Amino acid sequence: MALAGRIEHYGWRFPPLSRTRQYVDDDPFTTTIVHAKKLTASVVNVLILISFFFFLSLAEWISSKIIRAGIIGQIAVGIIYGTPLANILHEDWQSTFLALGYIGLILIIFEGGLGARLDLLKKNLFLSMIGAATGVLFPIGLSYLLLYLGFGYGAVETFIVGASLSATSLGTTFAVISTASSTVDLAQTRVGSILVSAAVIDDVVGLVMLSVISDLGELSQGHSVNLGWLIGRPIVASIGMAIVTPLVTKYLFAPLFRRYIEYHFARFDHISNIILMILVLCAFISIAAYTGTSILFGAFLAGTFLTYIPSKHPDGPFVVMSREEGEREENKSPTFVHTFERYLLDVQKYLMEPLFFSSVGFAIPFVQLWTGKRIWRGIVFTLLMLFAKLIVGIWVPLWQLLSSSNLLNRKTAKECPSEEYPSEDSKNPVWSTICLSGLLLGSAMVARGEIGLLIVEVGYNETSYVSEDAFITAVWAILLNTVLGPVTVGLLVKSHGKKIEKGAWGLQRAVPAGGGGSGDSSIDSSDG
Image (tube, rainbow, N blue to C red; front, side):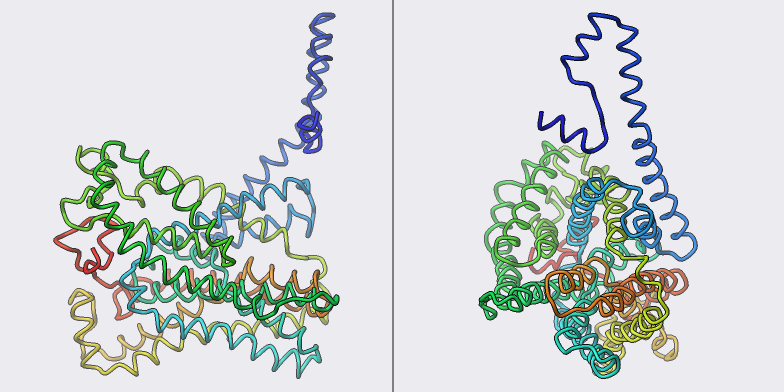
């Protein structure tokens, strides 16, 4: 009865088994009519679902063609079909799609970890930390300048709004990288590795902000909260996972896997790969959740873990030039990236990812945005918050200035093919490429997306500090920045992608140990 009630609650109505049997015994024709009536009542629901998924695909295609940012169309469909506007989808469906979309977000981050260049992440970690810190401090600082001093919002209220705009949408960042891969493989570029690291760090910082803001509500209600442990737990957990994971991977799991396990994988190809991928992903997100850090951070670490553990020498079973070679050769196995592309990529790209970005649209209070005061305040705050993230890109030319020209020439001679890097005489093209790389980094950090909305909604719904005007102002900035960021990146990659790819902050050539294969050859060979 509980299952039947749940099915009926979702709009799918079926007659009880006992009544069906009675109709069958009495009159088959009557049974057919009753079944037809029951099913006809649910046809509207079927048509709604069909139209929802159709328009998700159509909107993604149109926005990709026009503005090179397909996720914008999916967010728009979510606004229209969800609670904010027409409320066409049943509330339970929206909750279901939200859960499926979150799985899609985890898969997006997991794919980003699988394709990450670990050597570039390690080499540019310090610069990534500086960029992430800039992307957190500037939005909060500029929020106080405008909201606290200009609009007269409260100090705590301003902090909550600024914290929501200090976040970077990790899902949007990796979706942008994936979308741009047809033109430029950003994951294999220096600026792309900095972007990935900075976005992951910002996600962890966003989790800390969310925890603090959530418990500010308990403090305002008179509940006792250990604020030090509240702030310290996600920080300690994140740093602990970031330190422990590489150590146990390099000195424990990688040697065990390479010595005793990986050669058996060649017997089963994708089956053994996908079983290990699911186990590792579930383990990492569970550890992340129970230790108090972001499960998205856990998903990213799971991807990098699987990228590192296979052998990198030419005889290793995972060192292949293509997926077909891994499937064809008896002593070879497809890489984990190959398995993801074959079994999970289509589901992620055409189902889970659209549901995730449409669920972002479900959370936007669209109708409440449209009053004169809220519009102009929202636009002004949007422009300020746009600058607050774009400024992250200034570290690319600044870092270039801090590096001596001789050191730069030595490094680029090793990392880039000589025919791809501009000559020393063409100084203007070099610096224009460097500035374009910085603009790409800043633009990709602009989108706030689901993380920003979550923070400001918790502040608005669970604390007494955030007024409705402040909430709407924040939503304006989050929404417009989530639109402007991917659009700018898409147009930038379309017009200057190849130029960025060939510059000093573009593709970095790694030398694999004794040759290598697709995907895994990008790992630092010294660690193999």
